[in-house]
Structure formats: structure tokens, C-alpha cells
Image 1 (cartoon, each protein chain N blue to C red):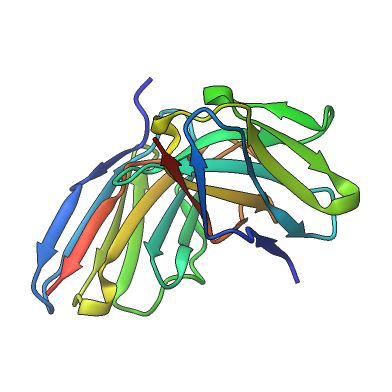
Image 2: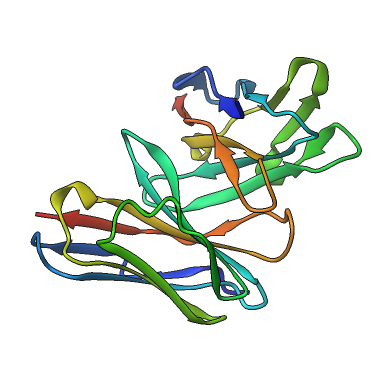
Length: 113
Length: 112
């Protein structure tokens, strides 16, 4: 089975530009998570979707960040405008049900110059 | 407050030696516990999980972990490490039906 697929793997862009990160969860999983990982703060949960509905977005840093899940097989995380402090590795994870483990994609390494 | 502590930031082990990575948690209810491994440039891969039942849990890649409620611990072990085990290891506790509380990670270095 294919795992969680994220694209792009790497993104380098200048501050002020819009950045869109993409995620395809594992088929049949009904929960999706976006995380950010930095050396300073470790893994931070940004937003959690259940059945395509955002349930908890309290981790989204500010209004520059937005996430959508238009259907069960696709989600995006958008940063507009981007800032250097947004540089991090962004992970998407999906989960089947309840307390089943989360399965992670390989991440997008984002560098904002 | 709910928390997960991995007291060792780095651990260095000789190839072939045994390994134990420590994880202590603070959580009011019966926890769901996980160990993940992250190789450089990769995502987090599930090694093993504990939900209930047998407190000694077997995982992938020859790893096991033991849940000790009295010590609030869920330590990860491997009898003989391989160079390919060099990675960062994360312990996590399921704090709700979706939240995971993550430890800060332990970086494992393998000496040849």
C-alpha cells in the first residue's frame, strides 16, 4: 500500500511568496494531521481534520497559514505571505480510526529566504 | 500537566551492543503509548504501540518496549544494534482521541 504522499519534498522561495504544500493520505484513513518540525520547538501539531472537516486548528501559528481538505484523498497547507521564520519541515500524517497510530509522510523541507 | 520526557538527548552505542532508550510520561488516565523512529530526511515511522494487555510489546526491526505503570515508563530496547539503527527516536502518548504528546527525541549514534 502507498503511504502518505507529500509534495514537494523541498521548497525554497523568497519571503512574501505564497507556498502550498500538498498531502495525499493513505486510502481509507479518515483523520489527517499537519505538523511542523523545527530544532527549537520539535514537532508541533498545526491542524487536525476528521472526515475532511477541520476539528482543531489551534496550532496554526497565525492567519498567514490556512489548510483545506476538499476530499478524503487530498489536503493542502498554504502559507501566504511566507516569512523566514516559517522555515521548517512540514509533515502530513493520516490515521484510520480512534487511537490507531498516525502514519507520516516524508515531509516537505521548506526554506524561506 | 500531561508530558513526555525523554531524558537522553543523545546516546552513543557500539554496534552489536544492547540499547535502552528511556521514556517517562505524565498522564492521568491509561495511556496509549507509541515509539517512532525518524531517519535523516525521512518522516516518522511507527516502531511499536501499546494500547492494553501484555506490557511487553514487540515492534518492527527487532525493537521491543515495556510499559511499567508504576514507573510511568515505556522504555524502548533492542538486544543488538546495527549501524542502520542510527536515527532519532520519539516517544509519544495519546492524550485524547487525536492529540499526541511528543517527547523531544533521543538521537542514537552507533559507533563502529
